[in-house]
Length: 461
Image 1 (cartoon, rainbow, N blue to C red):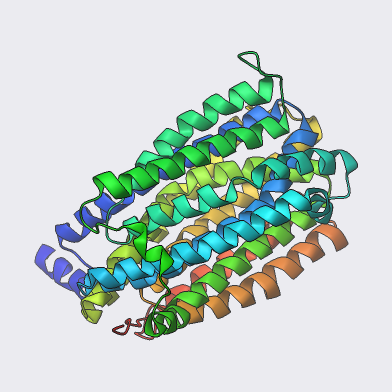
Image 2: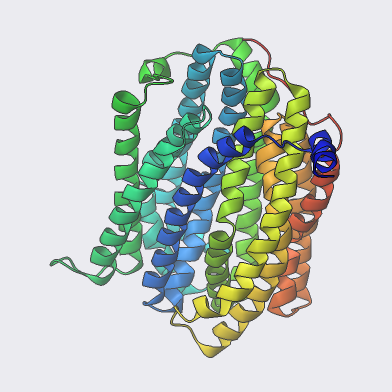
């Protein structure tokens, strides 16, 4: 009976232990890294929250503009990972290095552009998100300092994620661990004015972030040049133009991932605009809920990252049947994680709200949004694992791009606007509307994986 059961399972999912061992090796460092990153975000929110709702709203909305840049960087990183993981699986180390060169060149130009805009037009940026004069003033000072964060953070992020594409997840964990210590320490000094330095409030939080990102970037450079021995990447290729064939492959499989994540960044920013015009209580509540949401879905992000790397390398080797089974294995795992994550939100949610100094009305809104978050997280696990992991690793980036456009811009944004600013529905239903794309994606992507249309192998360059 047991053998029959295993035989049935082998038809649909991977059952050998080596697969799950490799998954854990790739997942655990990413999970630990995410725990540290979200811990930093939570401490940032708590520290800024001590300054009042104006400060927490200002930093939250200012970060929404930064999130656009971050999503762009994640898009370029994802594009690089799709190509690099498959080329690595095919044994083409030199091509992986050229992919790294191209992505770093693009992110460098992107960082310069965002830095100039943030430094010159901070108040104008904030006025897009809110009409509260106090929030605009505080947020503008935050964005001025943030303008110096773009380059070190973006380049450091790309370096860490490109190293991850070849199966090395140590760098990201090392960087996050050091960033945690630097960020918390600098925030405490600059926000509240310690060691003889005047209290800077929200501006101090931005300065703490800047210090952490600069240290991260330095660590990445040292690691690549002195410690990493597998890829042996050097920066001399940054001065060379990429080949036409590599650009074609980047445009075919990579560019859709950039567009997809960029649109995700813009849509999240627009959702924040909707919340910003509903009042600072809604913004503060959403910031608190988002922190817990990310903490409870950390395992999902780790598994999605592992899925992208493992399936990309398997397809690079040309083993499509194995890739199909790996995809179904990750899908089954994501469903289980969704149930666990939703349970954690319900169990920890009310307790976590007590960490913040907020008004009674904000507390009530946060509780309602936390309950909605539990429903969404149930589907978010499957949506994230399939879109950011399995299908993206399989090179199905063009399909994902169109799916993101449809679900975010034709569902989440209009429904969120309708629920929040037209019908003035309770916070529970507003958040469900704002994140309805996760529910739709979880269902549609599960069906997408039943065939082989999602598998696209890179071409030789």
